[in-house]
Image 1 (spheres, rainbow over the protein chains, first blue to last red):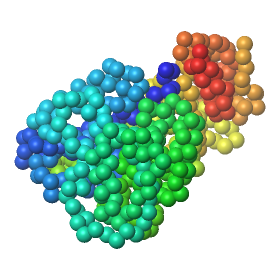
Image 2 (spheres, chains in turn cyan, yellow):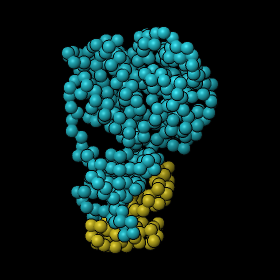
Image 3 (cartoon, each protein chain N blue to C red):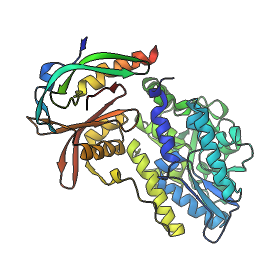
Length: 375
Length: 70
């Protein structure tokens, strides 16, 4: 496959397995732990507040010997056919689990569950959903107040106990469920699986639209990416944790906002920073110098960046480089500057102006072709 | 030699570093296994290249996809 097919998804995996997000910790007072919560990288990106609440709940009501493991399971690399990168991610994860005393993983992502079952046979794993269902947090069953259609994530196809647990949880918080034509072991993929969304975006949009049209009710799912892909295409959708901790959303019908690609990175880093401080009184390592560059980006420009899959940190890297080289064009009419750089495989161009203590961004675009410049 | 940028697309831009106008000049662009010359606006002095937004999001993307499909 050409690099453009999977590059963006692979870079997201590299981010998740970098110091910006990874954590492998036993709870304070324990050298090793019996359990470790593994929320998955995309749940942390979509709903970091829920990850924090689940971890607190596990410590309080399940086992105070529950550690925390933040990183990506590596499946993105396998989907991209990058076997070496997958093996590297797998080895790193196994080393971290070993360093924690080989605890049982409490997994909050159906895709990660499937990955662990298929590629990590020695790992002890358990689904978060079966634990939450057994906890009986919402022990007094609510009166049914709203109907949703349930969408099983493709990662949960062969996990009937997880499918049942989520249905049971939904019922307990007052949700009546309708089944989609294809469900459980035959459920449709939202196109995050296999990196299809990255390889063929128009096909991905069409597939999600078709899936979204199967039932007029709002959708309930238990995969962060399924929720966000539905929301992106205008279908009201919830992750079960959106409602589990905030049941008022069931009545309001107001879905949580879908974070854009840049926010998905920021959410993961903030989650790490916050949890390190809260549970271990630790400060996160200093961020890269370019991350200190402040940007002013309108909603309109932000949606252009999202469509073009350009991250805020890509812009920060280019501007940081420009400050060093001084290479930029200036427009005689508008006074806007235009600069470019190639931090990795992609060249980014930014039209900007200095503003206050940062830079206002007017547009940004990119290309993969390499330009042989004289300077 | 291909020319994808019209004069009016870069007439208002100049190199800020050299305070110099741009001119169309042969530049080699490459992607995957292929490379080819294109007329692009560059700074007359330092050779810094200017790629307009319309070129990047249309023609360059189209060529990239064609080369990927080969």
